[in-house]
Length: 73
Image (cartoon, rainbow, N blue to C red):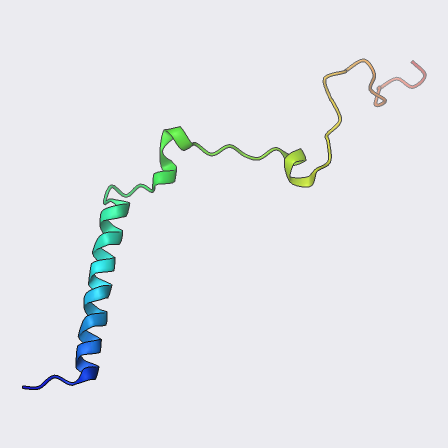
């Protein structure tokens, strides 16, 4: 039987898809965990001042606050 060019192209594409699927499975592993779940790469939330570019006021000075409960003191 003589295979047509379209049949050869289809067979090549199907073979390539199978090889890529196998390579993806081998690279990602089968443990059910993604590589970003590793303890050495734990997620740290970004600092809000890094995102906005606006420096936050220092809240460690409790004596200089303007929100005192007793006015005039």
